[in-house]
Image (cartoon, rainbow, N blue to C red):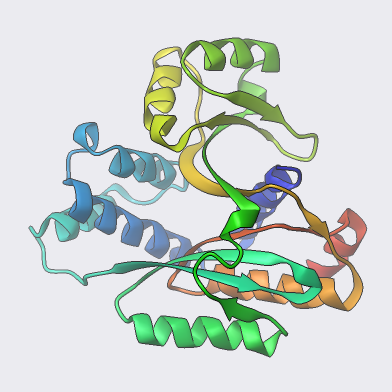
Length: 251
């Protein structure tokens, strides 16, 4: 679990400073289309769609774009059919990656991801090769500025959450749930007036691997290039890089 909040914060800062912010919109809209195709266009009856709509709102995705993405998913508008694929990989220093992608061409996507990995001394693994290093959890982010930790913990446990994490290097509390309970807890927290930044299923590392030097440089390049890839929705990992070295790599 350690280090998750730091990387979530880095991802937000990276997104906020990215000149190609439209790429973030595209990934969210793709996720909306898939969610609507699988569960329908009504967020009240489609928890997955409801969660990604919250993400879209947090990232200021235009309403018209959201509506078109939903209609493409439900078939009201013509659109591309996306396939969801999960890849597993091992990198320098023994670190592990779980890569979630949505693509309209699986052969293209796997070739491009494999190229990123092999170019930086990493390799794609078989299904289950690194998955055992992670726990699948529901994670709800609540801004720390919105309430005190003790108050959030009391509310969260009362509505069925497992725990609340407060890591010093993050601006968010993490409310943890069982995967099947994510949206029920999310909705219950909202009903209690809790401000929610995001709610999604994540792969959280059971342990983290601290890396430095050349390994850190290679792993950071892998992480950054995967995050920037058009078809990659999420990159979960178990590495940690010391703050001073991370600052150098992010320059």
